[in-house]
Length: 268
Image (tube, rainbow, N blue to C red; front, side, top):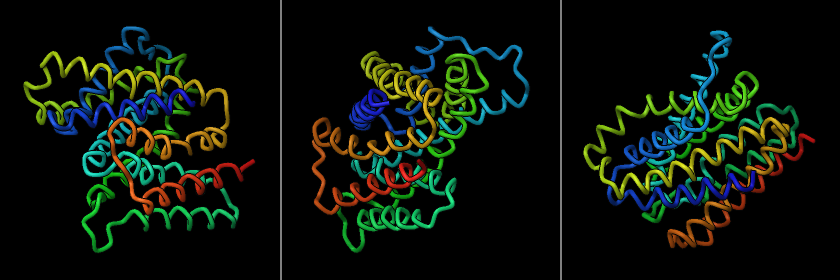
């Protein structure tokens, strides 16, 4: 889980550097397509013997994966990476709270909401935009769906074949948008090389590790570890992208991290 968190955030930082040469949707397609090719070279999807319900779950996993990344990269183009992940993380947090029936979870929801309020650009043109907040919130919704369908896919597909199948579906979903936006620039050798690195760091490595982790731990423990994502993203933004956040933004990220840990740990 820890390796997956580090890998996906470094990959996101590498991808953001590509935004000066390609639109975000084109970078998403490059990431998912190269990731799918690399994964297919190792694992072939196995659908023989599976029911239509199993295949439908795999398709839903692929859809959530593709739309999550598309929304996330659009947010990343408008927000610092730490802020983007903090808002996006409200999706998994909401999933944890919805699955619970405790009153104390209202405290965690309130704390997370306070974090988002701190991030909102109230009457100022700072580093945060409303459009970026909207895309990050949408990415969080698809992230929650990704967690649900990832676990269901891991239980229905053997090995990593479910992930391989989902990557193909995801690539098909984002291809029309990404190819139209990127055009011939997607074929430039230096772009393909960086895209392969982004696909490996952001897709193949973390998704494979998360799929295996979900087979070995309950969602509660998974959620606790995933709570480190916003802080890890902020640190990657600082050291890789040189994105210096304000104290208010660090406090907001801290609120989301504490709320996420509290909501998932209390399930014990």
